[in-house]
Figure 1 (cartoon, rainbow, N blue to C red):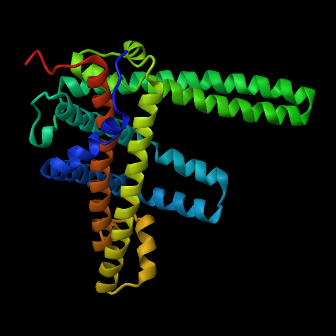
Figure 2 (figure 1 turned 30 degrees about the vertical axis):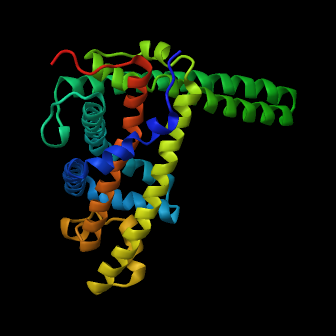
Figure 3 (figure 1 turned 120 degrees about the horizontal axis):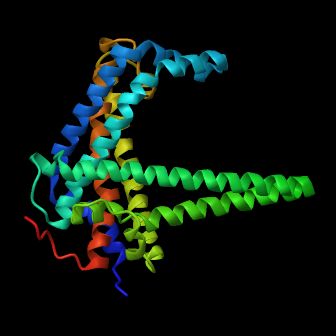
Amino acid sequence: MAAFSPTDVAFEGFRITRERPITVAIWTGFYLLVSLALAIFMIATVGPEFNALEKAAQSGGDVQQSLETLQKLLPFYAVAFPVGICVMSIFAGAVFRIVLGRPGGLAGHLAFGEDEFRLVALSLIVSVLLFAAMFVIMLVIGILGSIGAAISPAAGGLIALVSAVAAFVGMLWVTVRLSLCGPMTFAERKIVVFRAWSVSRGHFWQLLGSYALALAMGIVAALMAFIVFIALAGVLVVATGGAIADVGALFRPDFSSISAFFTPAMILYQVFGAVITAIYYAVILAPQAMAYVALTDYAGDTEG
């Protein structure tokens, strides 16, 4: 049975960000352009509606009115969702190229070709499978809860709690077991779903430990960066005539107009978010590819 070091796998993404700062800078610029384009698109299409929905949520406004406003936002999300899937697949392709040693892509190994299309399709397939699994699990929980409630309220609550915990553990198990789908699909140039299940057999705890360690270290790094950002944002806001309290407005962006949204502090916030996102994708995706290499003795690209 193949084995690997969970710590080596977990820190692969951090190694990439440390050794390839120019690549991370390119990723940051790419994501910044995408996020700014989406912000401009939102302002131009549903900016007032988004502001109205946010104000209603903060004030506990009318539910019916909030639902009507939310419906008006659907066209934006119909664009934002596929864009998000494509961006994630582009980043995945770039990270996999580095870890799996396949040269290609444009600046920063970014590309949007056959590899990325397969990763987009894989994301949709896995999302449907996980949604179907969650639906079945919730249906079973509902049935068990109803049976328990018929016996006694206490039994119903206990069954519901145990079922919810079991559902979470089950979904976590499935997600980890299928986590090698992405690098396998990229490496083999064909969509791979269920075969990833057999490759990860017997390695659940190693994989879970690697991903949990990578996520935990990523959260710590993000929190430290967030503290630095808040300090810089406070200095910038005060320097431009605002007050420290105005820093909180960064988390409630004004989409009513271009000028209202693009303040100096908001631009800094967008840059910060792009940096964190670029690092996040490396930290989360690289361990999957590294684990695939370790478990399959992947020797690199053989087709060019």
